[in-house]
Length: 259
Image 1 (tube, rainbow, N blue to C red):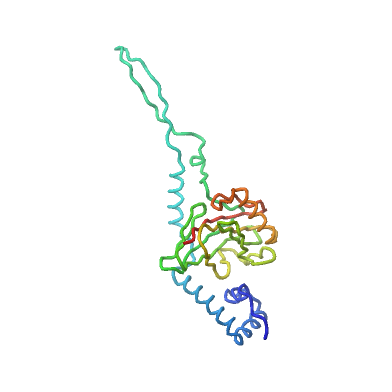
Image 2 (cartoon, rainbow, N blue to C red):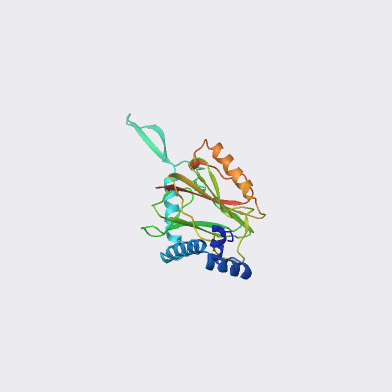
């Protein structure tokens, strides 16, 4: 009996990313292997459910509202400057001058916790497959997951040529998501938004940080995993406080709270 196909290969088959020859080989194997056929049906069913909940468009209005709320919350309270003047009629008046702080991140246009990608690149993470509606997670804002929900990651490569994704859980375990081994994969040719094949359902409890790295050169997953471990250690084991990985390229981070 031949060996079973990996989940990664079955996901690539479902996403139409295999060559014609390779796709024919995997389909022939799945036709004669009930275990692989069942796994392939599960992948296709999960993807169908996720896509049926709504198009993979960018929720621009919702994102803009979320960013405005975050910017408003980041704006510092006004500082009060007190000066006194002496009235001619021998009475003392206290004049309170209200002046906002200058040079704050809110006034300079920076939004704390939000990763901005360079080179015209963007990335987004959609959550769906559960009982609630499909929604988009905002970088820098923890997003709670419900039981059975899956995440799908999309990107616009801009000038970058390679993409990789990984996750870090609350105890510092790092899992390569895409690709599962080797080096970061070439981006899908063509402009516009593309989606990583399949999706992921995170098990266990606690926080899970999902990271997408777009780069100009392929980065070995071993390099990304080690960089994530260092960032976790530098955050004193707090996955919610991790900084960007010390690797070349543009990054987007999301923090998900598992049920």
